[in-house]
Image 1 (cartoon, each protein chain N blue to C red):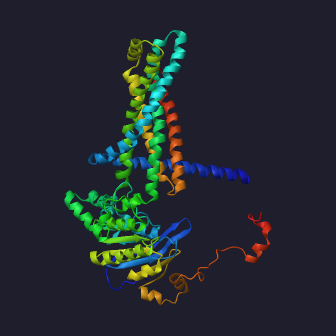
Image 2: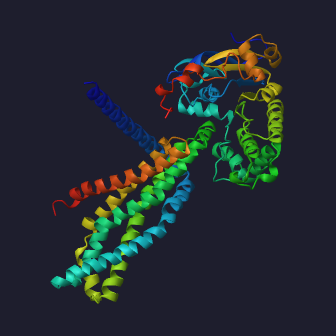
Image 3: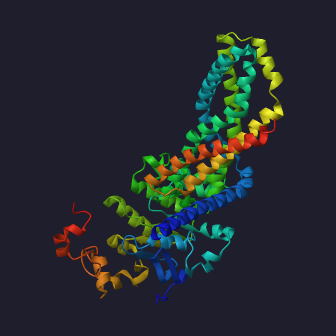
Length: 263
Length: 277
C-alpha cells in the first residue's frame, strides 16, 4: 500500500513539474511576444541575431540540402525507372522537399546548430549574472535578449527551409538529369505542372514558421530556465535538441494531417 | 533596533522576512542605510547577503516586511517605476556580469546608450571619464575575456556609476582578489562614494577590508542581525559569536565540527555506516 502511495506521489510530483514548466514556458512566451512591438525601434538587435541564428546556420543547410536532394534523386530514380516514370523525378524530389523534408530537416538542423547555441548562450548569460545585471541597469532582458532572438529565429527558419529545398532540387537535378539521364525538359516541366504554390509551397512555409516558433521558444526557455551551473547549462542544451526534435516531428504529423489529410 | 541617529536614511528595511525553503535568509530584519555613507552587510558564506541585495534591488520579493528605497516601497512599484528607480541604483555583481560580446568601452557605454540620447562624442567623453575614475581608460578596447578578475570588477564599477546613481550596491567585491586588486577596490569604493556623493552598500565577508572603509556595519547570520554599529563599536563587542566572526576563530559558537554522531561510536560501529564497506 505504501509503495503504491509512493508511486502515486511520485507521479503527482512529476505532473506538477511538467505542468509547472509548461506554465512558466507559456508565461515566458507571452512576455516575449508582448514586448515584440518595441523591436521596431531597435532593428539592429534583430539584424544581429538573424546573422547569428540564420546566416551562421546557412552552411550546414546548404550542404545538407544538396546531399538530401541527391539521395532523393537517386532513390526516386531507382524506383520510378521500374515503372518507366523517371520523367516524374522532378515532381518526386520537389514535393518531398517542399512539403516535408525542407521544413522538417531544416528545423532539426536548426535545433542542433542554432537552438543549442541559443540555449548555451542564454544559460551562460544567466550563470554569469548578465541577465540580472541588465535588470539592475533597468534594461529589460526580454526586450534586449529574448525578443530579438525569438523574432530572428522565426524569420530565419522559413528562409533556411526555402534555401534547403532549392538546393535539394538542384541536388536531385544533378543526379537525375546530369548523371542518370532523365530528360531535362520533363524534369522541370512536370515539376512546374504538379507543384502547387498554395497547396505545397505555402503549406511548407507555414510548417517552417510553426517549427521556427517552437524551436526558438524551446531553445530560449531552456536557456532561461537552466540551472546556472556548467552541468545545468549542459543539460539544458541537450534538452533543447531532444525536445525540439520531438516537437518538430510530432507537429509535422499533425500539420501534415491537417494540410494534406484530405487530398 | 536599528540606529537612526545622524544622517537621513536612503534605504529603510522593516520586518523583512524571506525564506529559501526552510532556510531563513531574512527573519525579521530591520536596517537603515544612510545617505552618503558606506554601509557594510557582513556575515558567513551562505547567509543570504547577496539575496538581501536582490531584495533591496527589487529582483526578489519578500515573504513579509518592506524595503523602502528613497521613500518608495520597491516591491509595490510598477515595472516602469521600478526601472526608473533602478536607473538611480548601480550594482556591482560578484562576477562583474560584464556583457561578454561587448568590449570594455561598450560595456560602460551600454546603460548610457540604453537610457540617454547623447551625441557620440559626448558619450565617448563620459565613458572615458568613468573608465579614468577606475584607472582603466587604457583598457577600453579589451574584451571581458582579456581582463583579470580585478579589472573586470573595476570595469563593472565604471558601468555601475555610468548613470551617476544615488546608490551603488557591491556584492562581494573583494572575493578572489590578489592583494593589489583588493587594495585598489577598497580605495575605489571609499573614494568614489565620497567624491560622487554616493550611498554604498557593501556585502562582504572580508572583515579587515570591509571594516577599513565602512561607516556602519550590519552582521547577519541565519536571517537575523547578530550585531551592528560602527567598526570601532563592533571591535569592542562582548558577543562571542561576533568575536569569532570578526577575528576568524575556527571554533566557538559556530562549531568547527559539522553535526554528526558521537566520534567514538562512529569509529566503533562500522556495521551501521554505508561507507564501512
